[in-house]
Length: 132
Image (cartoon, rainbow, N blue to C red; front, side, top):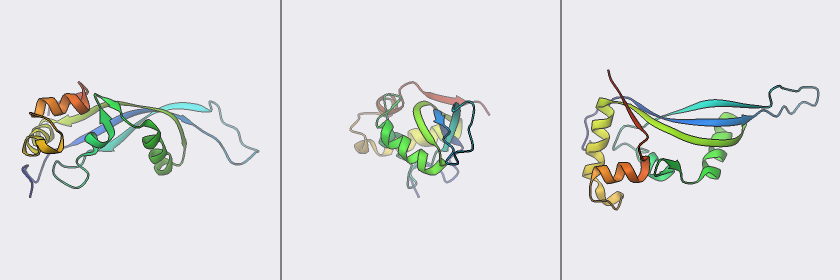
């Protein structure tokens, strides 16, 4: 068990991606060849394996290694991604409180003095807490 409750609430990372459709069949073509879409990635419960996605992927609200994330999503989605931007961590109050508690219990993982510093370092101002 972690520093958080087992039911940590609900959250997801939201990205905006420009996708290029490239049919492998020469008899097919698509219009438009590029589309914009929203990609949602479920946020892992704080303290569980994978909960540090924000630390490993973001810096000050921006993707810290866009090429790596593009390649990872291209593999998962089976499309070419030309551009991707982080939009927000959309969360309910329970998840947000659990996240802050877990960060506070593990400040050494972030080289930070407090939870607010960690949030600013990695997520910038891109946290959207939804009302129930």
